Amino acid sequence: YDERTFVMVKPDGVQRGLIGEIISRFEDRGLKLVGAKALTLDEELASEHYSEHQGKDFFDDLIDFITSGPVFAMVWEGKDATRQVRRMVGATDPGEAAPGTIRGDYGLDLGRNVIHASDHEDEGANARETSVFFDDDELLNYEQAT
Ligand code: CMP
Image (cartoon, rainbow, N blue to C red):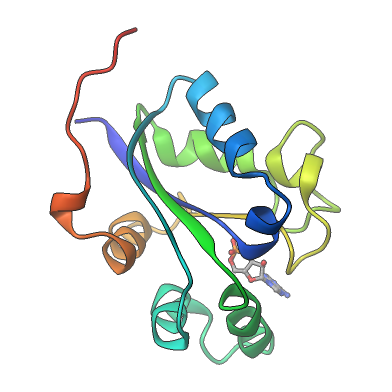
């Protein structure tokens, strides 16, 4: 199949009712949803997901925030999906994110930036982050009408 990429609506995005808007953007773009679940992260799962940031000065705040309420985790499939999704998500800091991107349109600050997407420059990030949230048999294989 085409490339798969991990995406998560953060607690601020869920609180503000942005799940549907975000799904629509990826659907409109022609990406295929192959996995989705709503859950609240505990500290262990959150630390595993953000293991690359362990030891950084913002790590504790990041874990506090990401465990503060439900998140919506997804896997999207498509040609060059990781890079496509990152372009649609925009820069990490909403103040720097271009208008028209998800963070540029909805993000409030560096912490409350609505959405997480796997880094296309970090090889292995997708597989690692997907496996924190999904078992293999929770991901779908199906044909999408084009
Ligand atoms: P995300 O793409 O989920 O990956 C790590 C998150 O840490 C990032 O989005 C930001 O929401 C958050 N964060 C908080 N402070 C910083 C910082 N100084 N630099 C980078 N990311 C930060």
